[in-house]
Length: 299
Image 1 (tube, one colour):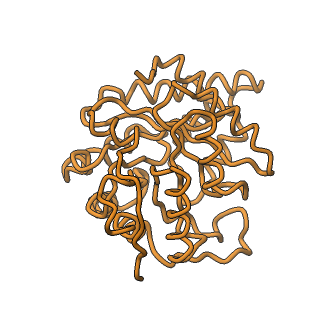
Image 2: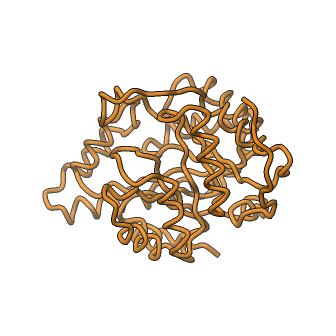
């Protein structure tokens, strides 16, 4: 499609500068409110201010809620640099370009491009998926939008799926995402360290970590019910039975949350010494507690 020319800011974002610095990157992810009340999201963002380098807002993953564009603007109003998640599942290329231009107009220039999971596997199976383009094509579209703005205007990211097979194909797709404009790659939540290490070996062999900042996803499971839901997600979330048993084996909600936090801290410590890994992407309601116990700080 023909992309419009317009004037777009060319100053790099704080996240982009952090990527270029080579220092550790800390990102949190927040969920969109299921109603029109912005205050809970704004309050959650305030609690992360100065504790993370940026915070993302999911794009209707798990529930239908406030649009990710509105959510990113709310996060920015709370003093946290936002990352907009844009999923190709729900919009065609016209709507996707419009979403990007809207983000630019609001001063939001960190964007994660993802294809998303088809609606038949999600919470609104009657909804029709679009998938006009995939995440690699979306990256390329946004990278060239508008063509006169210069390469520094947007800081584009993409997702990586360590638990998906075959590992070799996943690594090849990551390289394509980097070539299409991704400056950072956020993995899906990591629960199986052994599997992640296999994926990392292949990813590093192909040099993906040298082309973009690879950031490990860590989701804090705070209850047995949440752990079971996560384990039942399709495509597979890759949660080992032993991990599931640790959380579900506890009777009280407080004990279950304590174990979930413990597992997240263990994951961070297991991966912290991995050469080439640039940081962590934290999600879940107990992110501040995990950061405190693990010693993660945004310097």
